[in-house]
Length: 403
Image 1 (cartoon, rainbow, N blue to C red):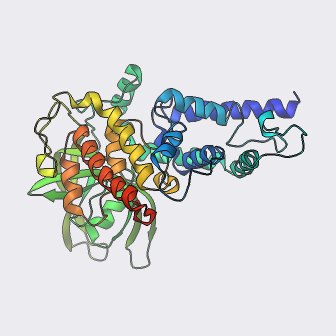
Image 2 (spheres, helix red, strand yellow; image 1 turned 45 degrees about the horizontal axis):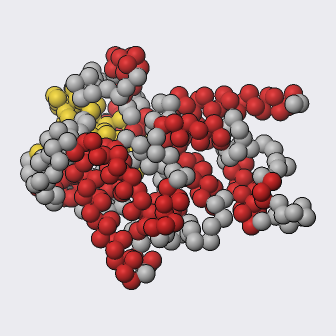
């Protein structure tokens, strides 16, 4: 092996280890974003199966084959990462002249099958991926989806125990500004834009940017506050002092205490504007699947369900994912990245395909719900109805598309 090849291998192993750390040893593949999408699309394309479509819903027999290429546990994520970097099969493959499998060459050694051509084309496409951009994206998405770093004590305790902190552990001393707004209800991973023009919310942006871009988005359902942690991922200040911000939603939050902060006018210090509400303490919320009836008012009848619903969550996750591939295209299903392995995170990920962005009432009902199983059962039921309609009409134009 040449010195150049040795150096390349060392760099790839460094990337591999870095992605392992960012993904918590493969537990969080969703942080790879659209770079994970590229990996999946490349793997599916290399199947060379004419019955499999990337742009339209697939039949059940085809979705079963596609599912084999979608990681269903952290071990499979680690294998995919190792193949991508250590084995140089996908991301940053530096060998333009790499040989395909012998099975791709006919007996006369001249004709290459269509499958091999597709594989080589996908490899060339993968070579154009900027690994450093993938790392930056993974860091950003990790900070949005899993903001445990907001409390250094929790991070240390979590790292020592190799687990995600529980509700009781995640109580932060940070003071985060609150944006009370009824016309938005974001699920984890969704993005939206806000134009902040009120003096108190201009201060919200300034305060949020000074501590990682975090603030809390709060709406109400029947006087019950529903709060989601949000991170500003990009913002521009206009000439008139407003702030246009692109924001990404993170986990649900329970505000434990709040206060009012005085906001004075920048033009006239004697002018006092509406105060900014800030959270003086909060905790990240997790589901409790030992409670099987707390989502009845969210449109799901839980009567007669198994008292241990959480045991079926992984199976429900798999069923929902396969149904998504039957009711939506591969490209659309994975356009935002790989689905979460964690069933609770996946339940919100899959709801994004079913709930309109303006359906604030339904979104708040499911944000309020504390049962992963009931969200997944709802998703499965809706997708089964869509799949049956598509199968009966053979109309792929009915495909579900993510908002």
